[in-house]
Image (cartoon, rainbow, N blue to C red; front, side, top):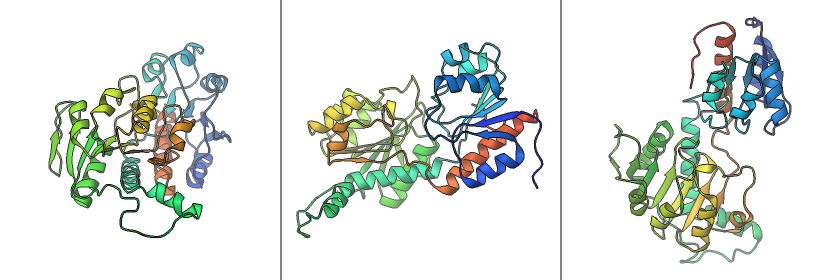
Length: 323
């Protein structure tokens, strides 16, 4: 039997894997919210008043306005389930006396795998081909059917060469012999040849696949805009596994509709879960429902990391993963 930690009420804002929920129920005085949708404004305000720790996640928009509504919060920690925490105003949280943690590292390989999935699906027109077979209209193989882009030996541009960007680049270089170029705030040491581009526009102009792997937030909102998309080559593809708002969705739709780029592979969306009909209607766009970390073991790892932060907070220990 698992001994319970120091007294304190814990709220987990979404259902978790069975392993994480079992640990949470055994170790904490926990309430697990049954709904899978993000919390409402009223729910977030109440969570700061009624719980000592909240395990929040994507879509739980703890803005400065939310914290302003609770001048003396009971909550001491927002333990974010996920590495990205742009839905939480961490500065406003700290000003209110609330720490914020995340789950770095747990998501790296799974998210990189989805990036490679989207690269292959978009370049090789796999989604379009699967729909053709399912429709019953496939007339059979012929030499010029659905010709796509061969990835081996092509040039990959990575926007943000952090943990996830590096994992994508390693897979692309060692798996497909791709040349790697990137933009980042500083030069990066890598285990593969990589060239840092002078600018994002310069990078976009020289690569066959452009992958977005930067954090979300005000600094990166619409980083991929019409200027960047216009710089891309007509045969190039854009892949986004970061945050939806990093890409100006309207500009992307315009570029795709005009044929200025060949295709896009998206796991995230600017106004998620709303996906514009214009994107859904285009055959050259591969759309996934935010599958980046969607495996049982990865989601359990993330949940256990979040609970490690919960335990540390309730026991007065140093937080393992402060942001």
